[in-house]
Image (cartoon, rainbow, N blue to C red):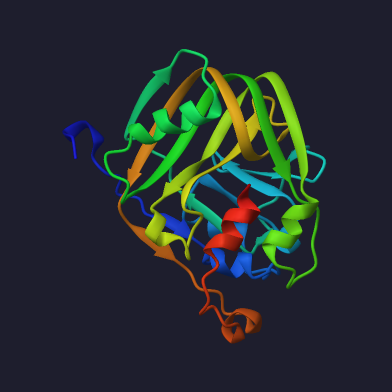
Length: 240
């Protein structure tokens, strides 16, 4: 790894493996008070899949099914969140307009290896952003089914921030593989799970992470569930 891209000493923290979410385990796992002991930057969801979560600068934002973002108390609970203490390893500027496919390729070309984790913050102007959120769900409903009820939002000529991570493909049972990003407007009033975007001029900050900390839920639902089957296809379907 190049000397100017030394990995962070902070691990990536997951409060539960993503396959539990895919299987429909949406009830409370731990509070955000506990999650914040492990990071000030990240994404996830809330009890009963009640919206998308963005954590930025230690503040927690809930993006509900109408696309509205609200700062919320850390006393709320989460069945799945991914966080770290954000200290960028390196940064660069994308100063030309590009489509989403080009943006993804440019972003991933910055990574020293596909076999590490990366925390990513992209800040600037976008000609278009498409995002989504999901209405509150009943426990046990598979994530792919819940995603059928997603509400999508289009933001045009907007300023905002993408927050998220890149996870190696071989970690698919623990975290969303590849790029997983959430969007939050600069005024912190709108956002969602990113589906696509067209950056115009953005600053890209990347944190190289080589360690993982995982908490396993101690709920009865989790302890008695069979996770032996492959949930990769279901997760991919739910994320699009």
